[in-house]
Length: 152
Image 1 (cartoon, rainbow, N blue to C red):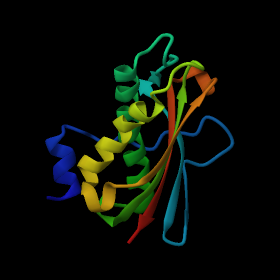
Image 2: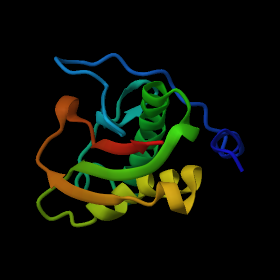
Image 3: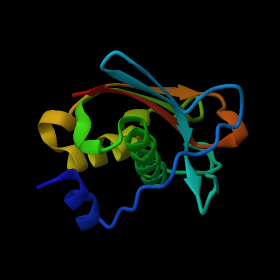
């Protein structure tokens, strides 16, 4: 099944690349790698604000990470022309706005990782990953994720 078919089956329409909010570009391609800048969680087009362990639980954080995966795929498509050109999702790095006692950053990040696996399949979508708890993310967003992909 093609990536476009998987997206359609999941009811996912990829968004256009977001305009950067500061002095950076949405992605950089060098050789056969594409580095996507961090994408913050958004809900209804606005930053998805919250802190895991205080104002949000793991399931809501996981939904936010899933939403970021959709935005990341939109940016990745813009970077490579067609998601079929992706040879491998190499690495995902997730920053989770969380209290010092919250320890489920890895479960929050699964929202992104699981969707990438569904869309790209196990050979292309399986990736290395880091998930960190941080004191704050720009605009008070609950999660920020960046991605590195290999291009065919």
